[in-house]
Length: 132
Image (cartoon, rainbow, N blue to C red):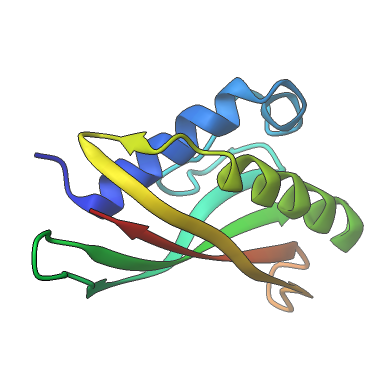
């Protein structure tokens, strides 16, 4: 069985690639595992991920707190617009992901900033998911 985090990341990757507008903006890449040299912007990468036990008496459950980072070299506006689209796509995920059941997924917020070292803009999308 796939880990809950990997199942959720895979479902998000497929959903982003299936969304025509978001996929086109990201150059068809979807959710990358890491930024490689020469990667074109904008790019979507996983940030911090925390998993907690959320089991009940009759089923094993996991609460996943996840940050997805949208990086842009153009503007904060671009990063935030893509983050908003990502939230819409994430909240529409199907209940079945990688042999697990997605009980709940909500976008908890978006934080954006300009990264001083690189001059790039990043919007961090904070998600909370519960899977069984």
